[in-house]
Amino acid sequence: MKEPFNTQIEKELPEALRNVVRQHPLKKIFQEEEARIRQSASAGNQPPVESASGGAKVISMGRRLAAVAAVLLVAGFSGYFVWQEFFVEPPLAVTLMVMPDSAEKANQEPEAAFLKASDAFFNEDFKKAVPLLSAIPKTSKWYDESQFLLAHAYHHLTNYKEAIRIYNYFLTNKEAFSNLPIKHRNNPSLRWNLALAYWGDQNKAMAQQELNRFKQEIGNNASWNNKIKVFEAELMKN
Image (cartoon, rainbow, N blue to C red):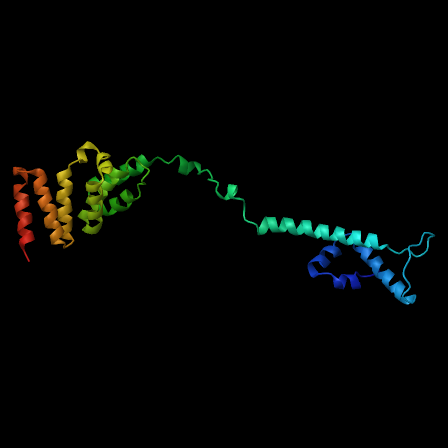
């Protein structure tokens, strides 16, 4: 029967290294070393010598050390590759990579999304228009126009705070305002709507302030007189 590998040397090894040794061909050397130790003990602890005449062969200390070094080297390489694969983070040059977008995302044309959103707005389906307009990204050339429509959609849906935010965005941002189509660059209308939005948000002080600014901007304009009178009358109410 084949002798199991269960020597004193095995017991003295760490468990991880012991598993490597069990699977490595060099385990025979350790078996021979164990046999040498037993032979030495039975002979009265006489120091073993290496036989050159065909007698019992005893492994030299140099060979035993070489075997241990070889096993350690195998274990070291195995552990290194396991560590690299499962525990070490990728190099910065890898983690900072920008992976290519899928063809569907890279070729997506935002114009179709804007046209769908604006159609919903001009069909007065404001509940549908709001999420569609909100989805237009800042990188799109239709972003500012979509925000302009979005402010009015919020206003119609009585979401005055969001309407106020976007109206102010255009009134305080000359670049954004200049990006609007010419047909939308009606500054008095934005100011007027802003005043109404403040009123709807029950902020009468800001509503009156914006109304006064609106009146200064338009000057003596008969086409606005009736609306202004109605608005001022409402502001005077408790």
